Length: 178
Image 1 (cartoon, rainbow, N blue to C red):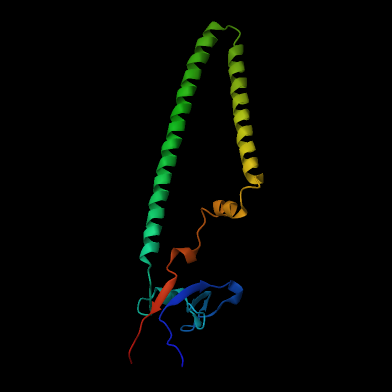
Image 2 (image 1 turned 135 degrees about the vertical axis):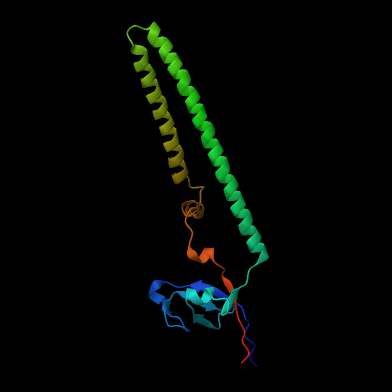
């Protein structure tokens, strides 16, 4: 006996070299709908995947909720980053205004004007030390054997998204009685 074919199809992507024509319109495509048991498949173009008369996406409620929660967390993180950057800018401005007041007070008192050169040298030294600390932290992070490559790759790929992640991955074909 043969088992009935379930109306559940997973979307897979193949490489450009393995692309074949869509089974319906014969346009070249890299999208393949395949059954969960991988017994049947067919190539389908993106136009037919978007056609609600041909197939409909099966949306998992838990997955949709997790995606929504992740988007909310990303928005909150961006807001916090912006607030933090604004605080840092305010601190820099206040420090610069204090330094200007000090430099204007010392320049009036000091006839030679050597204090301005000393302040510039001190600022350059402080900035250089800060940059060195940042470089050491990055070097430590890159060469730390405790950090796994999957974590590094996740951080590198954090900003990039692919089209397969954007759309639904499971579809159900429409049934027509003729």
